[in-house]
Length: 90
Figure 1: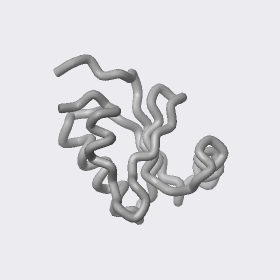
Figure 2: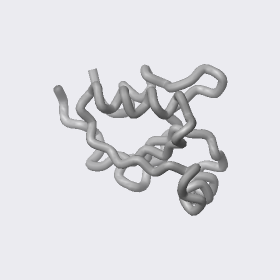
Figure 3: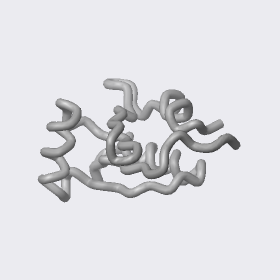
């Protein structure tokens, strides 16, 4: 496997979100280390997400604390193909 294009990954999530569960299961299946921040349990995180992205939709992946990437396709769900490419997975 090639080197991953990031050092750290944070997942902005919600405990009630099925797409978020798919996202973390996807990361687990690929052996990707990550931190989860649940916006439904941390109001400051929800505000931060909206300030950075203009949205409150989750899941969002944050690479190296700087690069915010939407990990879902509206009305379709978790973006498995897009996240595979973004994270340099095969």
